[in-house]
Image (cartoon, rainbow, N blue to C red; front, side, top):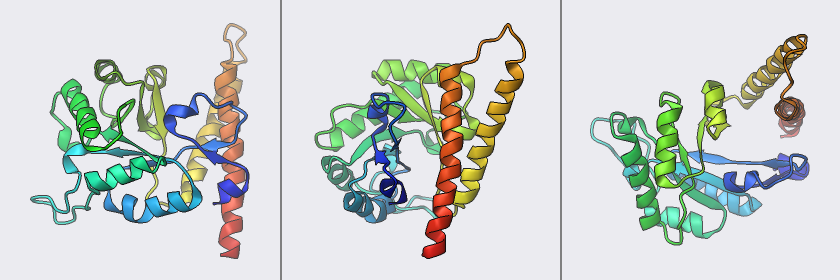
Amino acid sequence: QTLLDRGYFSVSLVNMSSCSEKEKMFCIVLCGGYSNHYEVAFPVLKELNVHADAFIPTDLVGKTSFPGLERFIPHFSWEEATEMHQSGLVDIYGKWHPFDDGKDIIAEVQSKAEAIITHVSDCNDQLLFLFPSNIHSQDILTALTNAGMMGYLVDYYNATAADIKSGALPYICVNQGSNILDAIDMLQYRCYTTLKRNESILQSESIQSPVGSMKAVTRSFQLMRTLKQEIFYVMQFH
């Protein structure tokens, strides 16, 4: 709500590239396919008319328990996934789960994409996927190309230059146990160190500055500072 009040608007990850760099946009990612994404997050998305992209492990859809796991978190059903998708506010994509380790990457990405298209009504395209950081980028590229996808998500703090070059979209994961102010501090620090490192590199005349990239880092740094101020404001009056 704070972002909306300040003139920001939500966009899907797929549509993000078509927006101007000067536009005040944000993306929301729901990772895991958990029941509370449907029961808690989805009503808020509808109330605020905000978009989100949900990445789900298709083998766990609808499961409320799992053999050998006492603290298994229930996952929303295909019917609930369809309801969210048909609202126009949630796009559904596949996610690699630790249970998938050891499986053939190409076959598994294709299988998850086909499962979503089959079970989620009116969901005809699978353009994104969420991978863990321990899968090599070349393996990811092969899997994406085979499945006709355009990009993938990786954890921001483990993303490499090779990941970005291959089409990765870095994201920062927060949950009910996260301190959002700590997350902002960490991102702000990363932006700051990147800017300082760039200043040092530019001392060499033989190296060109990646202007577009550094502008993005500068904007991120400024946004984190503003967002932290806004959160302090909200906390003060609530």
